Image 1 (cartoon, rainbow, N blue to C red):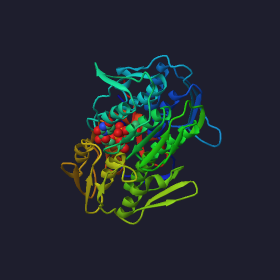
Image 2: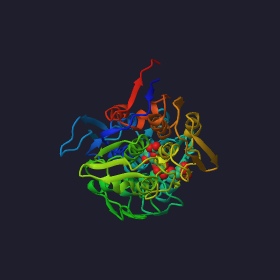
Image 3: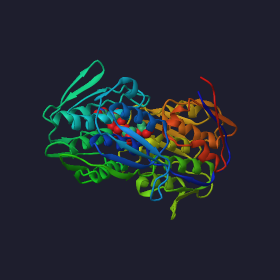
Image 4: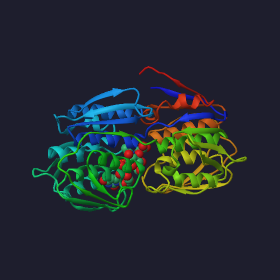
Length: 429
Ligand code: EPZ
């Protein structure tokens, strides 16, 4: 398994191109199941998770072709997905267990084929992550659903119908699954307390380009009037706000000065105000966003993760790494996932002072971190260790970096181009 070796202490300077958003790209790819025409997605990041989903979609019968460069100035991969005929409505365990987002094929398959059999995703490193809201929502739309032998077995012989679905709490994936299903359901569906994450909004915009009738995009309530069929479309994936935030923190912890090309601040406003409070200077440029550390050390600030437009859980680990060397204390509270503190013991091994009290972590800034061998079992926890390693004295080796490859495109290249001393160590087996 590959490792990442980092020798810390070099301020990042230069520019980094932000990739297309993984968490927007994945649901967008599953939307291709809703039409027999071609959906072309540009600005897709080149990531293991994208290939995993492409494999799943092709076994459902989607033909996928890839083109290196998009028209219209977009960078990144271009993928054309055509679900002319669905050849299988089963999403098997072996593919779903690799990536939970695979459950997003459930709504589209059921809406189009009136049946679907999708492996239940298991728990994962950050929590138990049930999919009950996806299931209850589809049941409200007329689906009969049974759980059998580890699979969600769903059918709607008369097709799905509209319904009022009130989410008891915000779920990104359930909103996406039900939004896609509602596009082809009979009548009107109201999604109340829907997720408003930019990735959900991006999906809704693409669905509208495919012929869907959706009102209230970006609001707490979305109203979908079902249509008989959707058609093909071209859609450019939004820039990755979590990748952007990650590089903001990497720049800030090293006292660097980096321009993040293509980044969009409006998707990150909660994080930006917290970071500015800590002493990070963030300004919009005509090419993206410039990040610098104002003067001297950062100051500890308190952070609580919340659904959008609040501070994203996907930046919690990176923020904690940043706070380890800030002046004073920082209270970080995770409200979305019950177990998203895998990075805490590893950051402690690098000299951080962090105490966990239930869902909150008290970080007391130390003068410096020290390099150490570390590892983590999820994507954002892993990248927080890279951020800590960039600032630490001496050498940090991050093990099990396949998590990083799931969600960060060319991480070490982007960082090295800004002066980081970072390299991937390839290891057989
Ligand atoms: C999405 O996961 C993202 N994944 C996650 O990104 C992100 O952390 C999360 O949203 C929150 O923003 C993708 O977009 C592919 P949820 P998702 O449904 O949709 C509970 C990353 O690092 N819940 O909004 O699975 C759930 O357990 C990742 O890129 C239920 O109880 O998240 C969690 O506590 C990891 N029942 C909370 O809701 C349900 O039916 C929010 O989960 C659904 C969710």
